[in-house]
Image (cartoon, rainbow, N blue to C red; front, side, top):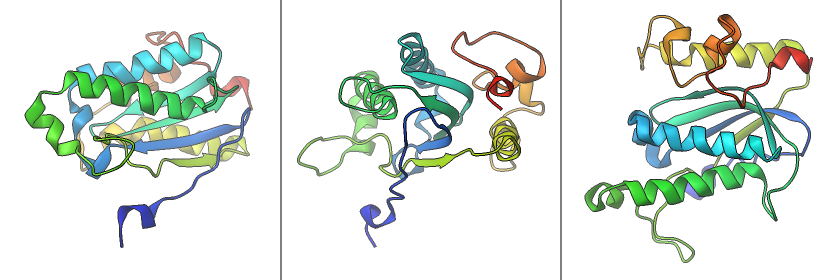
Length: 181
């Protein structure tokens, strides 16, 4: 089975709220480095400032990201999710030393490197109950046994947990999920 056989083909419709996951190619821990996390944050902030997306929740883990978000309109001809992945990939390529860059090399006609797996998962959130289950899942992710990044979700800097639990406004692009349901 090739990696293309595992593509989820998740569909996203504008103006609906989704739980969305994107994973670094081959589950490599590229996002362990805070500089790479910052690229994702900058992209979310930019897309939000252009009113292309609304971000309700996020966590940036060492090898994947989870979001609860809504895409409001296309960014030119592409969905904002594609813009996020494309922008961050270009920045990652610039930031990585040549020996590290080799880990992401692919033999494709349209590109030499692939930082994100091609199977982002999008699950539409129809009800408040499911939305809040996903919100809890996102915020508890850094506490997972395989990660042990923090003991309190609010202590993990690259997450929206402290926004919900303490009212912190560290990320100006965040909107409260409770205003939607």
